[in-house]
Amino acid sequence: MSWSSGSVWQHARRVAGVTTLAVVFGFGPAAAHAACVGDCDASGDVSINELILLVDIALGTAPLTNCSGGDQNGDGEIAVNEIITAVNNALAGCSSEVTPTPTTTVTPSPIEELTTTPTPGPTQKGVLSVADAVARNTDGVAVHLGETVTTEGVLTVSAGIFANNKLKVFAQDGDAGIMVYHQSAADVDAFHTGQRLRATGVIRQEDPTSDANPANGTVLIDISLGAVLVVSDGNPLPDPQAVTLATLNAQGDAYTGALVRVVGVRKASGNWPTVGSKSTQVEISDDGGTSTVVLRLQRNTITEPLVSKLNAIGNGPFTLTGIVLQDDENGDGKLLTDFEIWLRGPDDVVGG
Image 1 (cartoon, one colour):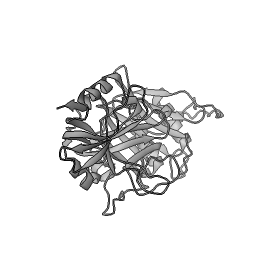
Image 2 (tube, rainbow, N blue to C red):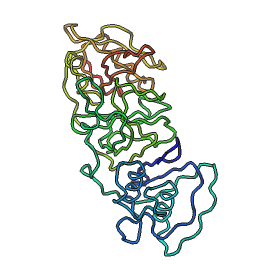
Image 3 (cartoon, helix red, strand yellow):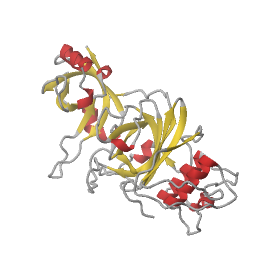
């Protein structure tokens, strides 16, 4: 089926300590409901897991046979109006009678919330491990490039740290990490460090601002036309992997999107930012000066505590923790840099 930009997206969030599922549509809500459309297991009601399954079927990541009860008109697919009916059935309860659906409008509907506690875990059928989702071939091209997949991991950075008008957070499972991207931060909740996120979207290898999808750069999952669910809160963050700058330069593909820690580095070139600075890049080297990597400080990370810490460190040495990225391409089709490390805040830098 065809999904237009903004037609439907789904996410889960915590409100007053309870997980809630929110579904936002690009037109007015259907107030009435049909008899148990969306009731996949014939239990007499529609659960949050069944709503998630309907979206997976609509996106093509699950077969219709998993929930034939969602196909109201029997055309062999799950349409937006059928998901709307299922949401209303979940909210108001299933009815034995079919009531008419009012005419839709072009005005975005308010968010409708279904309060429940999700039970699915990381072993749910159809959910790729993060390592599988970011896997590359021998040429460095993502194995699942352009495919719609579902993966799950713990957030290692909160929304709004690395971007203002887009969502750029990182989910990690074990040693593997992936960027979770949405083209408009206004369309997503402020996800937080420690949340376990299940994301469904298209695998890409650059900040997908345009229609281009080159096979270079950080592997990410674009949820702009997909779905995301907060499975749980307060999860421990994975331990950063101890690496050297030489290792990053030689094997950066294996660490992209993941937390790393580098000991004994120095500022080789560039100036530490001042409060209010835009995104700043400096070059760091190991103590011997034989390997260098770009250290990037995004605008929202450049706070007084971080600036004070960096000024006290000077040129170093210092210990650095951050997330590894492979930069986007420039106009000539070449990467602006190779691998680089993005700081999340002042706690990622320790002098000495």
